Length: 392
Image 1 (spheres, helix red, strand yellow):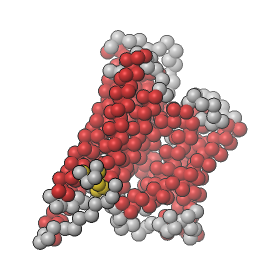
Image 2 (cartoon, rainbow, N blue to C red):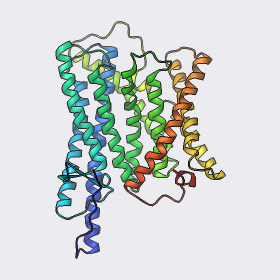
Image 3 (cartoon, rainbow, N blue to C red):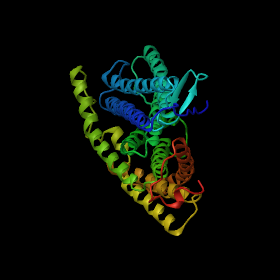
């Protein structure tokens, strides 16, 4: 897989090149928006489906929550396929797709196709989803009802959709110099922070000294927050992400039980007898104190800039502090929602696990941001401190 480079057509005027670039970016906006729509539909579907399992019970393969989940992946996959075909057509016609439209095109199948990197990843995730969807259908045909998250088909589906969502972030990161690119990151990152940790259900059956879902939530939250900061060079993007996460959580808090109960009534199924006003499952697991973690990230960013700290150290420091806050706050959040007390030992363990996970997240975020910036170079905002751009 190699990056494709093409010089402008001979004799093409600057005006026509500008028009083509404008058209390419407009196409990129439509493609990116459609992918984000598909990911958002998948998030609604999984929140509805999980709440159905909690409040109603087992289900079959063909249910409305599943249909919503599969439709979202199909929307993202078809949009990615369309963008790959558009990029391939442009290359064969001797035109150059603007890298802002999903990233620089790469050769696929020996050059048969030219796929913008972000759409290649998203499309691959959607194709994987189709395969695991068929496996899930076969699984249901063998065992009938399904009431667990950690079945092999489910874990594969979660990983596939998470891959598709990660590809959408590559798409928007390529357009970080535009308003819609930044807006896409602000919306897309909370979606992946919510969905990504579901894959950790694969480790539920293992005897571990820590909760794998807690580690998954910490990793996705801290990694994506820091990657957004280092990639865009905008410290305030974390505030926008935190506010968007809160709005998304509030909506799912209302939507999930209403949709599950209404659907149960429409198909004549009763609710479980032991329901006692518990918080909706998926939204209650979303970080509720993300503004606190954001404050820590911004404070260390500014302190590192003021003190002139090396960019090789600051990402790990930011990750450690943010991870500790997210780990401790998630434990406190769970205790508050279940009206339980938190033992000091448990709080200390969650903080330590969060800090250790955050160190790795800071390291990876710095490296990922370098890859994303080099995929489509752009002017870094003047407010970007040296710690975020040097030594990474």
